[in-house]
Image 1: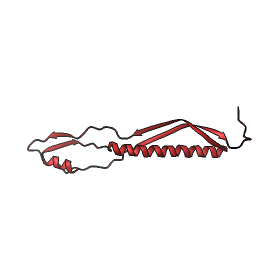
Image 2: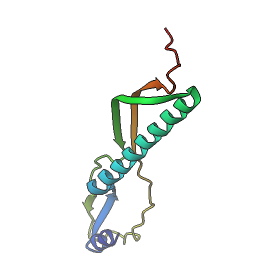
Image 3: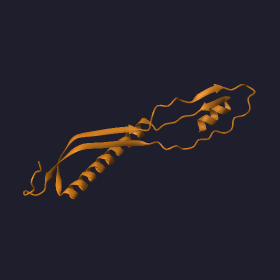
Length: 121
């Protein structure tokens, strides 16, 4: 906001101001979200196997879908102010939440936990 205030003192009017999470921070958050999604997938598989009295044999076709709420936005748009324009109010900004998500899904192949468990046709 300091930069915007300095630009306004130079006679520039700010029409719109957009911001976004940096690429590095977005990537770190996406990786953390992916790990969480995989742990959730594993926990769900554990719940299913406990309910069915089976065990996870292996995960097949693991799919990861990382979507980010971070999209390129236009930069600051500035218009030259008229020399006699009234003073601009101080800049202000409202913090907005940036959502960074990831999803994980897989085909989970199960096996019986006991040798006497019969396969169903």
